Length: 462
Image 1 (tube, rainbow, N blue to C red):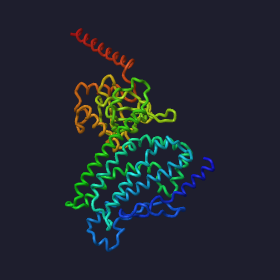
Image 2: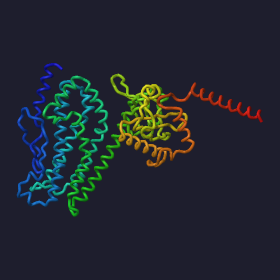
Image 3: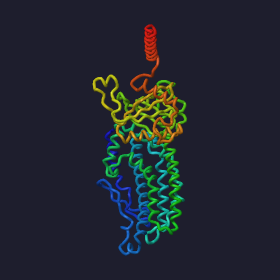
């Protein structure tokens, strides 16, 4: 970074001293005087309570329940103020300087930041409505209908939340650039950041969304049963839950497609047509094979895909190791600790085979696939998470109950095929084909020949 741009980075941190106005209650105006500029220590959120804005005489005129109700409403109000401040800060302290200093392109910044400016008026609108509804005594009489009318605007966050995974990946990639890394580090060390990195600011809208049901329930909890706000608050809670459910579904579909697009096939035969039907990624993560190799395993709604993380043209992707196993053909076995030894045949010869903990086995019941993989998880908690996800997926595809033990709901013929695969194939050996099958056939022929000769000798003696 050139000396002139270094100076610009230092100066921009000094110009952003306090985007936050002085503490306000819903009854005060939205604009306030900014504090004087100058070097300041790390900023902290003001935690003033609603009751602390009242004098002793005012406070004595309210019941304890009413004070708690107004505190809950005030918490909603203050949360909106904080969110607006953070959205403005993300734009003024990160987006605009990086664009001006040519640290990132406008297209890259648009991909990472989304349309943050569009959300600021949305939350300012709620603040204005709450302010208008505030009485001279500082209380908000009814809030339910205000929230009902306002909540549909949160649908604007569907695209923002759906894009978060790709945005985070791009940001992590850009952090490899020394200029980006230096800029973000300077921001982190500046007072305005509150020791939060850029992604923390970009993730604040999502975390705010999930708080709305909790805030509304808290207001409802302190609202008297005969209060006219009760019905409206219950309706508002139902609306926000529906909105969040829709956002969650869209986010899940986007995440699923993101990883599908990152799958790399060595052979087109590895690409199962079912991958185009996958709309949900149930779980994924790094697991180890019996030989100790690292895999990144994806459990989609229709397929189990085993991959190895690789880098192509400075971009990460996932190379598919074997042909994906359809969930409808999937068999699951929970292995007890110490039941198998890790390390494989070669490594085990020198290590005496360490007894494995937190392992399970997945295999294909389709004889043409003939796959079996013993997978090792880091701890018992994550093992249980994997088992739960696998059982649920199998139950949905095979029509079994998730709490049924593995194998009980599988037809006898298919169970037999699965056992054959378990014996003949694992992650440490190739599929049984070619020479291996011929050796097995030869061994069986010799055994039959010996039995025949033995039978002949017995007949001769007789």
